[in-house]
Image (cartoon, rainbow, N blue to C red; front, side):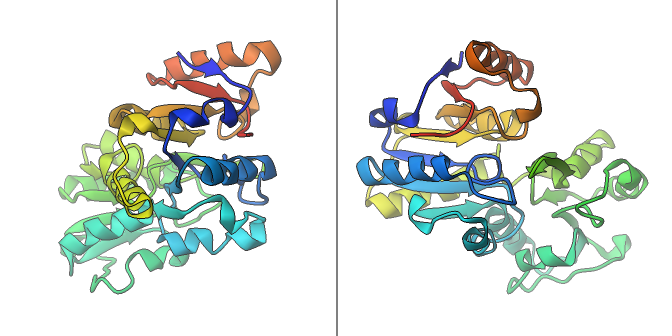
Length: 285
């Protein structure tokens, strides 16, 4: 069960690397969380590499390219791996497709340079790739059900480039591609998740840690930090990584404070069928 800790410094010596979520941990889409960034920088200075691991459906440069305007310092991490990177690896195997895309134009970087043919004709498609809702950020998933049901009936697999069902921007919850993938699965469709909690993104992350350190790191010496029980903590559980759950992110609206925090965190995680080694309201050193 999750044990509430006052800061990362108290457990840092147990680990040689950190895999850290982005949204909800180091920024909220509007501004950075300064203390979280300081904590990661101090871990880098005293212990080992920090690799950011995010379910953003675009390549990593699109993720880190936003950091300057959000106030995220570039010295708080060594590298970043995104679900968009893992999705590109899946798409390479399917080139030239055709691929039936669901998402916004801004997500098209996930297809760039892969020789992928995009089609709006389900009859000619070999796979569906969902990066976001087309009416992002204001859309809701249920209006897509008829379209998704028809696609699933054709036997087309779906690559879900962002497994998050929702994410938090400022104080607002926004529906993400994972909400459409959930409907697709309900309607009998096959869904491939390159991002958290599934293995492909972790293979990328561990490979980057090994390159940075000059040696591989074991899961037992790795700490996963995140605010998503069904993504960050479930992924950590599957990989045999200790998890540090951050309560103020996607579930922050219901977070208990003070002495009630640990009980709240344990109950939330148990309700999601996952576990974490530690819990904190916010990431601090």
